Length: 118
Image (cartoon, rainbow, N blue to C red; front, side, top):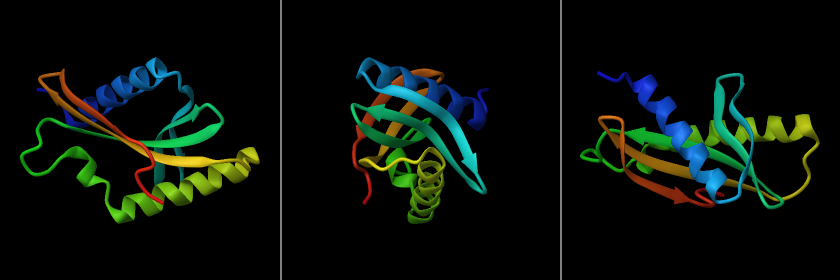
C-alpha cells in the first residue's frame, strides 16, 4: 500500500513533468521557510509561479483543489514573500494549483488551475 507521503511525492513528480512539457522552467521544489512549504517554484515565461500540488486517490469527499484551504493559501503567500525578498524578485507572480488523482499509482486525472488565488 502506498503511503500518503509517497502518493504526494509521486504527484509532485507528475506535476513537474507536466509543467516542463508546458515549457515552464522549474526553479525549486519543496522550498521551506518556517512552517510553510512551496511544492514547486517555476517560471512561466517571465512570471514567477508558486505551485501547490494536491494529490488524492479519489474525489469522493471533494476534488483535490478544494483541499487548498484559506490557511494554506496564506502560508504559501507568506512563504512566497520570503522567497521573493531572498532573490530580490520584482516582477509578476502567480499562484497555481495542480490537482491530481492517482489510483494505484496510476494517473487518473490532472487539472492545472492558473492564478488560483489573489
